[in-house]
Length: 142
Image (cartoon, rainbow, N blue to C red; front, side, top):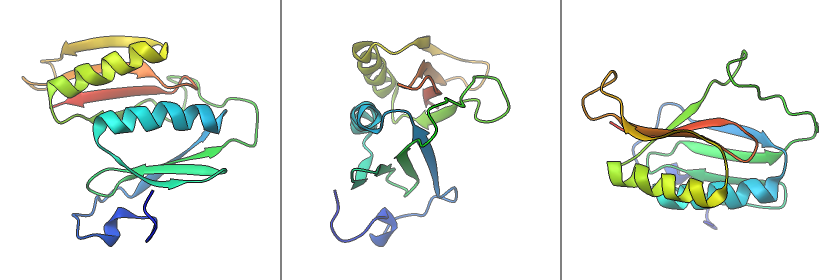
């Protein structure tokens, strides 16, 4: 974890226009373990790790923050109003396969194993899975 600050933009980097997202999770420790390993495969940098939150950032500076949910009732239901899924861009098809191997070891649900999706682009290679709270995620190379 960086000691000098919270955001990677403190270094000379290209700014990501999206900024950051925050997920409230049912079990912060469990989510830290899951996302920490996932983001290690994707090459993200850990920028915060406390008892109450954790965060990682892409090379471009987009932040993924996680906080312990205060309400025990899960709010995420796939295809309901709200987040449908979030896609992480991979640097190569091999990185998609690495994430797939990681996901299989975690025992979370896989919705779609790695495959080509030529309906999007000729090189779109992706897989979709659930995080530890059932949130629908995708990793794609394109």
